[in-house]
Length: 63
Image (tube, rainbow, N blue to C red):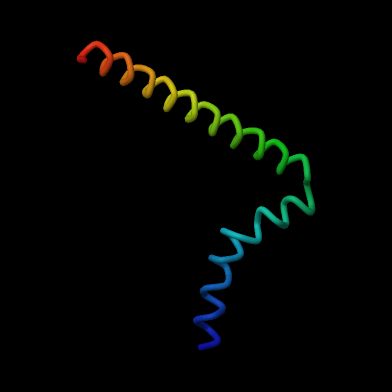
């Protein structure tokens, strides 16, 4: 069972602890990553709002 734990540990450490260790070692990288994620979220938000507006106008025309 020890080998199973050792196999599972690298996976969890790469997915969860890597961002934490990068934050501790290089805070700049985390800031850049955070900014990139926020931009992605904003783009997605804009696309959804645009889609909703288009649907609203389409539904308005249909009525």
